[in-house]
Image (cartoon, rainbow, N blue to C red; front, side, top):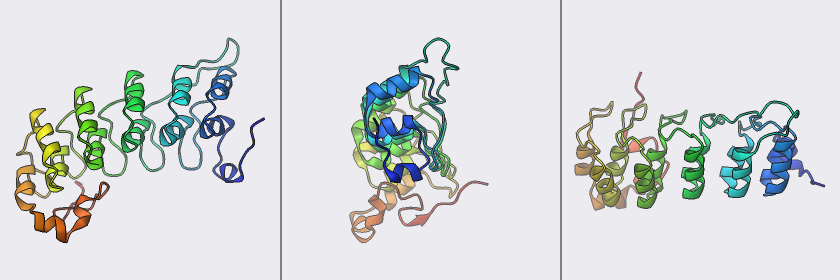
Length: 227
Protein backbone atom coordinates (compact mmCIF):
# COMPACT_ATOMS: atom_id res chain seq x y z
CA UNK A 1 0.00 0.00 0.00
CA UNK A 2 1.33 3.44 -0.93
CA UNK A 3 2.05 5.72 2.00
CA UNK A 4 1.02 9.28 1.19
CA UNK A 5 3.55 11.78 2.61
CA UNK A 6 1.95 14.86 4.15
CA UNK A 7 3.93 17.26 1.93
CA UNK A 8 2.54 15.56 -1.17
CA UNK A 9 -1.00 15.87 0.16
CA UNK A 10 -0.48 19.61 0.44
CA UNK A 11 0.58 19.67 -3.22
CA UNK A 12 -2.82 18.24 -4.27
CA UNK A 13 -1.15 15.34 -6.03
CA UNK A 14 -3.05 12.30 -7.26
CA UNK A 15 -2.17 8.64 -6.72
CA UNK A 16 -0.50 8.73 -10.13
CA UNK A 17 1.66 11.69 -9.10
CA UNK A 18 2.60 9.83 -5.93
CA UNK A 19 3.55 6.62 -7.74
CA UNK A 20 5.82 8.62 -10.05
CA UNK A 21 7.28 10.56 -7.13
CA UNK A 22 8.17 7.25 -5.43
CA UNK A 23 9.52 5.82 -8.72
CA UNK A 24 7.16 2.84 -8.90
CA UNK A 25 6.68 2.18 -12.63
CA UNK A 26 4.61 -0.98 -12.07
CA UNK A 27 2.14 1.03 -10.00
CA UNK A 28 2.13 3.79 -12.61
CA UNK A 29 1.32 1.26 -15.32
CA UNK A 30 -1.45 -0.30 -13.24
CA UNK A 31 -3.04 3.08 -12.49
CA UNK A 32 -2.97 4.09 -16.15
CA UNK A 33 -4.53 0.77 -17.14
CA UNK A 34 -7.31 1.38 -14.63
CA UNK A 35 -8.07 4.71 -16.27
CA UNK A 36 -6.19 7.20 -14.07
CA UNK A 37 -5.97 10.57 -15.79
CA UNK A 38 -2.50 11.54 -16.93
CA UNK A 39 -3.60 15.13 -17.51
CA UNK A 40 -4.47 16.20 -13.96
CA UNK A 41 -2.22 18.95 -12.62
CA UNK A 42 -1.16 19.51 -9.02
CA UNK A 43 -1.01 22.91 -7.35
CA UNK A 44 2.24 23.65 -9.21
CA UNK A 45 0.60 22.85 -12.54
CA UNK A 46 2.61 19.65 -12.89
CA UNK A 47 1.16 16.52 -14.44
CA UNK A 48 2.56 13.14 -13.44
CA UNK A 49 4.82 13.35 -16.50
CA UNK A 50 6.18 16.72 -15.37
CA UNK A 51 7.07 15.04 -12.06
CA UNK A 52 8.72 12.13 -13.87
CA UNK A 53 10.89 14.59 -15.80
CA UNK A 54 11.74 16.63 -12.71
CA UNK A 55 12.80 13.53 -10.78
CA UNK A 56 14.32 11.89 -13.88
CA UNK A 57 12.31 8.69 -13.51
CA UNK A 58 12.66 7.37 -17.05
CA UNK A 59 10.76 4.10 -16.53
CA UNK A 60 7.78 5.98 -15.10
CA UNK A 61 7.85 8.35 -18.07
CA UNK A 62 7.79 5.33 -20.41
CA UNK A 63 4.71 3.98 -18.62
CA UNK A 64 2.92 7.32 -18.79
CA UNK A 65 3.64 7.78 -22.49
CA UNK A 66 2.97 4.22 -23.64
CA UNK A 67 0.21 3.11 -21.29
CA UNK A 68 -3.46 2.88 -22.24
CA UNK A 69 -6.51 2.02 -20.11
CA UNK A 70 -8.01 -1.45 -20.24
CA UNK A 71 -11.17 -1.79 -22.39
CA UNK A 72 -14.14 -0.26 -20.60
CA UNK A 73 -11.98 1.71 -18.18
CA UNK A 74 -12.82 5.09 -19.64
CA UNK A 75 -11.08 7.54 -22.00
CA UNK A 76 -7.39 7.30 -22.73
CA UNK A 77 -6.64 10.76 -21.28
CA UNK A 78 -4.14 11.35 -24.06
CA UNK A 79 -1.20 13.45 -22.97
CA UNK A 80 -0.68 16.98 -24.23
CA UNK A 81 3.11 17.21 -24.34
CA UNK A 82 2.90 20.97 -24.93
CA UNK A 83 1.07 21.51 -21.62
CA UNK A 84 2.90 23.98 -19.36
CA UNK A 85 3.05 24.01 -15.58
CA UNK A 86 2.54 27.24 -13.65
CA UNK A 87 6.20 28.17 -14.28
CA UNK A 88 5.53 28.01 -18.01
CA UNK A 89 7.56 24.83 -18.53
CA UNK A 90 6.65 21.83 -20.65
CA UNK A 91 8.05 18.39 -19.94
CA UNK A 92 10.70 18.90 -22.64
CA UNK A 93 11.85 22.13 -21.01
CA UNK A 94 12.20 20.35 -17.67
CA UNK A 95 14.09 17.41 -19.19
CA UNK A 96 16.44 19.89 -20.88
CA UNK A 97 17.09 21.75 -17.64
CA UNK A 98 17.83 18.38 -16.04
CA UNK A 99 20.33 17.71 -18.87
CA UNK A 100 18.68 14.33 -19.45
CA UNK A 101 19.03 13.36 -23.10
CA UNK A 102 17.26 10.02 -22.61
CA UNK A 103 14.12 11.77 -21.38
CA UNK A 104 14.39 14.41 -24.09
CA UNK A 105 14.67 11.71 -26.77
CA UNK A 106 11.67 9.85 -25.34
CA UNK A 107 9.53 12.99 -25.32
CA UNK A 108 10.51 13.96 -28.86
CA UNK A 109 9.77 10.44 -30.12
CA UNK A 110 6.30 10.76 -28.64
CA UNK A 111 5.46 14.07 -30.27
CA UNK A 112 6.85 16.84 -28.06
CA UNK A 113 7.34 20.07 -30.01
CA UNK A 114 11.07 20.73 -30.03
CA UNK A 115 10.58 24.47 -30.63
CA UNK A 116 7.78 25.15 -28.13
CA UNK A 117 8.43 28.30 -26.09
CA UNK A 118 8.26 28.39 -22.31
CA UNK A 119 5.70 30.80 -20.94
CA UNK A 120 7.79 33.45 -19.18
CA UNK A 121 10.44 34.70 -21.61
CA UNK A 122 9.77 32.62 -24.71
CA UNK A 123 12.80 30.35 -24.55
CA UNK A 124 12.86 27.10 -26.47
CA UNK A 125 14.65 23.96 -25.35
CA UNK A 126 17.66 25.11 -27.38
CA UNK A 127 17.86 28.39 -25.45
CA UNK A 128 17.71 26.44 -22.20
CA UNK A 129 20.38 24.02 -23.41
CA UNK A 130 22.69 26.96 -24.13
CA UNK A 131 22.09 28.22 -20.60
CA UNK A 132 23.15 24.87 -19.14
CA UNK A 133 26.48 25.49 -20.91
CA UNK A 134 26.58 21.87 -22.11
CA UNK A 135 27.68 21.69 -25.72
CA UNK A 136 26.55 18.07 -26.06
CA UNK A 137 23.00 19.04 -25.13
CA UNK A 138 22.99 21.82 -27.71
CA UNK A 139 24.34 19.43 -30.35
CA UNK A 140 21.68 16.84 -29.49
CA UNK A 141 18.83 19.33 -30.01
CA UNK A 142 20.30 20.64 -33.25
CA UNK A 143 20.61 17.10 -34.56
CA UNK A 144 16.99 16.50 -33.54
CA UNK A 145 15.87 19.45 -35.68
CA UNK A 146 15.67 22.39 -33.26
CA UNK A 147 15.32 25.76 -34.99
CA UNK A 148 18.73 27.35 -34.57
CA UNK A 149 17.51 30.96 -34.79
CA UNK A 150 14.40 30.63 -32.61
CA UNK A 151 13.69 33.91 -30.84
CA UNK A 152 12.75 34.73 -27.26
CA UNK A 153 10.20 37.46 -26.51
CA UNK A 154 13.08 39.94 -26.37
CA UNK A 155 14.29 38.83 -29.79
CA UNK A 156 17.32 36.90 -28.55
CA UNK A 157 18.35 33.74 -30.37
CA UNK A 158 20.36 30.94 -28.74
CA UNK A 159 23.44 32.53 -30.30
CA UNK A 160 22.70 35.81 -28.51
CA UNK A 161 22.74 33.92 -25.20
CA UNK A 162 25.90 32.01 -26.00
CA UNK A 163 27.74 35.10 -27.26
CA UNK A 164 26.62 37.21 -24.32
CA UNK A 165 27.98 34.62 -21.90
CA UNK A 166 31.27 34.17 -23.71
CA UNK A 167 30.52 30.51 -24.52
CA UNK A 168 32.82 30.18 -27.51
CA UNK A 169 32.49 26.45 -28.15
CA UNK A 170 28.69 26.57 -28.02
CA UNK A 171 28.66 29.68 -30.21
CA UNK A 172 30.79 27.80 -32.72
CA UNK A 173 28.40 24.83 -32.65
CA UNK A 174 25.43 27.12 -33.30
CA UNK A 175 27.17 28.93 -36.15
CA UNK A 176 28.13 25.61 -37.74
CA UNK A 177 24.43 24.73 -37.64
CA UNK A 178 23.60 27.92 -39.55
CA UNK A 179 22.91 30.44 -36.78
CA UNK A 180 22.79 34.02 -38.05
CA UNK A 181 25.25 36.22 -36.15
CA UNK A 182 23.65 39.40 -37.51
CA UNK A 183 20.07 38.98 -36.25
CA UNK A 184 19.07 41.79 -33.90
CA UNK A 185 17.16 41.59 -30.63
CA UNK A 186 14.80 44.32 -29.37
CA UNK A 187 17.83 46.22 -28.05
CA UNK A 188 19.14 46.29 -31.64
CA UNK A 189 22.06 44.05 -30.68
CA UNK A 190 23.41 41.19 -32.76
CA UNK A 191 25.19 38.15 -31.34
CA UNK A 192 28.32 39.55 -32.95
CA UNK A 193 27.88 42.80 -31.00
CA UNK A 194 27.53 40.89 -27.75
CA UNK A 195 30.55 38.70 -28.46
CA UNK A 196 32.68 41.77 -29.11
CA UNK A 197 31.52 43.31 -25.83
CA UNK A 198 32.55 40.34 -23.67
CA UNK A 199 36.08 40.30 -22.28
CA UNK A 200 37.69 38.09 -19.61
CA UNK A 201 37.68 41.11 -17.32
CA UNK A 202 33.93 41.55 -17.83
CA UNK A 203 33.32 37.95 -16.81
CA UNK A 204 35.59 38.30 -13.79
CA UNK A 205 33.81 41.47 -12.66
CA UNK A 206 30.31 40.18 -13.41
CA UNK A 207 30.05 36.48 -12.46
CA UNK A 208 26.28 36.64 -12.97
CA UNK A 209 26.94 36.79 -16.72
CA UNK A 210 27.70 33.07 -16.57
CA UNK A 211 24.75 32.00 -14.43
CA UNK A 212 22.63 29.61 -16.49
CA UNK A 213 19.24 31.19 -15.76
CA UNK A 214 20.05 34.89 -15.93
CA UNK A 215 17.20 36.26 -18.05
CA UNK A 216 17.69 39.87 -17.12
CA UNK A 217 21.05 40.84 -18.56
CA UNK A 218 23.46 40.02 -21.32
CA UNK A 219 26.89 41.59 -20.97
CA UNK A 220 25.52 43.76 -18.21
CA UNK A 221 22.82 45.25 -20.42
CA UNK A 222 19.14 44.88 -19.46
CA UNK A 223 16.88 43.05 -21.86
CA UNK A 224 13.37 44.25 -22.62
CA UNK A 225 10.45 42.13 -23.76
CA UNK A 226 8.88 42.97 -27.09
CA UNK A 227 5.46 44.61 -26.96
